[in-house]
Structures are given as structure tokens and as C-alpha cells.
Length: 538
Ligand code: F6P
Image 1 (tube, protein in one colour):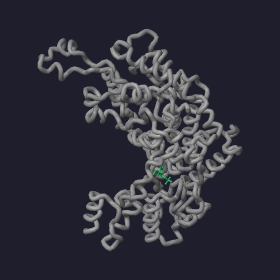
Image 2 (image 1 turned 60 degrees about the vertical axis):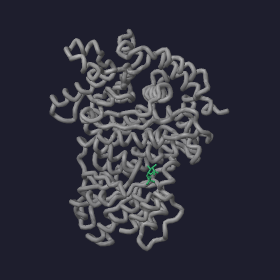
Image 3 (image 1 turned 90 degrees about the vertical axis):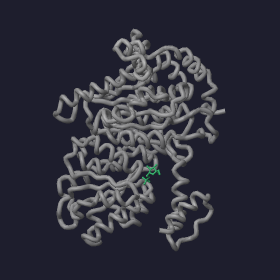
Image 4 (image 1 turned 180 degrees about the vertical axis):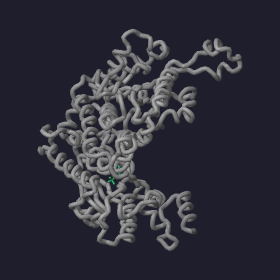
């Protein structure tokens, strides 16, 4: 029997279940007053302060969760990742995104080969290319410099650089980055509507170079280019990022204009590889390297800090606490930073594609819940939309509130208001407002129940100094390692994504069936056949 299969049968799991019963009647507003709680339930890493005090948990809870992680073999799993073991068992691959930010001189091996020199060789090539585009040395076919870089990719080949380009927009001093992902022609058409082909560079980003959305968008982008500038313009305006050299060549892109990565980098863990090329052109190689250093700081912390003081491990374990012991099915990410508007979407892929699994590493059904739905929106906008449910709904949604002490703009009074809202929301969610307090405010009796806030709603507040490249890298790495922690305890593979395949296969078959003179729709349920028929009759 593997450890993964048995996790819910372990004494550590039982101790947590028992502990949860003991906490049942303790309200967070009382827990918050316990002496020593702040020191015991906060942790700092890479310039980020994590306030864990507003959780339905005590230092004892953390101790029991850490014991569970030890029972699940988390320290060994972390070392297995860093030693290049093939922890992605269903794809028989190592999981080595930590090598993407390892400094020169560090050794990290996959199959006995130190991959860090390979990483730096590509990084240097990408940096050189980015510098040439930024300086105007790299020119379009007509000799004009590049003003816009359009990344064409989807999922992990889009969300990371797109999220980061928005998060770091203050630092963009190169060509404007734009992102096309959806096969919906509206995405490409709208993105290109005001662009000048002679000043546009396309980066076709796809690990596999087979993804239908990306290939379709890349073909149409090439047609748009060729219509304006002719075939010879393509090498000046289209480059590729991929692990699949043969496919890149078959597409007609010069391998000299291809930047590679490796099968040990999962798509959703790839934004700090060459997949970040469009971001690097926008912010420059120096700032990109600052971002890598932020990732690296958290990698080192993951390996060195004891589990009980390990920020990503504690984030992961508290997530497990709510999913497995309080029945939570969703988790909100609420950045109080407009620039982090795409961060929830980025985390949806990182967390849900990784941990949305229902069989263990051995292929047996899990006997416990796994990854929750991750969702969110920038504060304060969310406050005027869905926070009603967070405060007074019947479900408890644990949330991460993310904010920064210093803004990236000069409107300081706006920032004071923003941070006041962040702090206020976390306090209101935790403490609530009792019926007596409502009455004391003079509220008529019939309205009292409507104005009561139950409180006891858990949050992590992540407070950083400023949203800059280093901080962003650290923030992303925190969540990457949170995912690793949870997958280890749940006994699942965080690094495959078989669940995306069935829909792709069916779409490939249904595509031709939609043509009025296409093959007749076969082997569909009546509902699906009817929908196909309606479209076919257009
Ligand atoms: O369909 C899911 C997925 O495979 C993701 O895991 C991946 O990030 C995305 O598609 C894009 O894949 P690629 O980079 O190979 O185009």
C-alpha cells in the first residue's frame, strides 16, 4: 500500500479530524486574541510577509498539518524534484522548472546531465535577441524597427507572460507586448486591427507546436503578414518558442529564430523559460533576471526552511485543512493591485490543471477531495460584486488577499484607500459583526439578522513592498510550491493534464462534421447531434 493511498487512514489525518472538532466552537475573533499568535502564524519570504493569523487554525493546527506533510513524504518529494527524478510518472518526465532560475554554477541534473548550463545558454540567446529587438538592431523586412510583439500561444504558453506583462506594465520600456490565445478569430482580428505589419513581430509560443488554437492563429497571422509584405518578410517577423524543432521547421520558421526549452518544463510552469520571450522584450533582460531571482529566493526557502516555517508549504497545508477538514470547494485569490488582474486566471491553470485530479499516482481513485475551484478578481472591484457572498453566503470561501506597501504610481491617496480596503476586508471577514453589535448601532430589530456578519471566514494576507519583477517572481514561485505540497499530500500527479484531452479529440472529429457537405455526424448523443445539425444547416 502506497503512502498516497493511505493518507486519509493515517493517525495524522485522524488527529486533524479530531482537532477540527475541537475547534468547531472557537470563533476566529477569539482565536485572534491569543497571545503569541502573530509570531507563530506569520512567515516572511523573499520580501513577502504572509499573515496566517486570520485562519480557523491555531499553532497546534499547523503542527498537525506539518506532521501530515511529513507522513506524506513531502521533504523527500521536494528533494526528488530537485534531483531530477521522474516525478511526473504518467508522462515519465522529470519536473525541473526550478532549474529555469538556478544561477550559473549551481548543478541540477536530469538523467545525469547538468541542465543549468543549457538553461543559461538559452536565456543568453533570448536576452541577446530581446536586446536586439529593443535597440532596433533587429528590424522588420522593410527596415523599420519593431514596435509591437504579439505572442501567439495558449494555456501555459500565454497566461504566464500575459499575466506578467500586465503585472509589470510599469516596467515596460520596450515594444508593446500583446497576446493572442483564443481560436476565436475575434482575438487575432482585434489584436491586429491597428497594427502595422512592417513593425510587428510574432512570437509563436507552443511547447508542442501542435496546439490547434496556436497553429490556427499562427497561420492566420502569417497570411496577414504575407498579404502586406510578401513571403520573404516571414523570417523578419515570426520567431518561435518550442520544444519541438521539427514542427517549427515544418511550419516554415528558421531554426535560427527558434528558442527552445525542455520536456521537463510543464506548460503551466514555463513562464520563466523562453516562453517569457515577449515579456523579456517588453521589460528587458535585466528585469527578467530580477524576476528569476525572485523565483529563486522562494526555491531556496522551500528547500532550506523547516516545514513549520516554510511559506509555500504552509499555504498548501492550510488549503488542505479547508478542503479536507472543513469541506471547502473553492478558494478565492483577491489581489489588491490592478496590475495583478490576470493573476487569478494564471493561478486557475497552475492550480486546477495541476491538482484537479481524482486518481492517485498509482491510478487508484482518491478517497479524499483534491484541488478546489480557484477564482478571483482584483480588489476593490470584487467588493462591489461578489464579496456579499464571501461575507454572508452559506459557503465559506478561504481567500488570499495580496497587496503592496508602495504603489507603482504617484496617486498616494488612492493607494491608502486601496490598502485600507484590503486590511478592512480581512478584518471584517475574520471578526464579523454580532447581533448585539448590530443592535448597539441602533438597527431596528427586523433588520438585525440581515446586518449580522458571521465572520470566522479565513484569509491569508500576502503583503509585499512593491509589485516589481523580483516580487512577482517570488509570488509565482510561492504558488508553484503550494501546488507541489498539496499534490504530495493528496498523492496525485500535479504535472500531467490528461483531463484536457477528450474535449480536444472530440472537437477534432466534430470540426469536419459542421461543414454543410461534411461527413454525417456519427456516434453522438441526441443533444450533441442536434447542436451539430443546427450549425450545419446555417
Ligand atoms: O490543453 C492544455 C495544454 O496542454 C496546457 O497544459 C498547455 O499549457 C497548453 O495546452 C498549451 O500547450 P502548448 O504550449 O504545447 O501549445
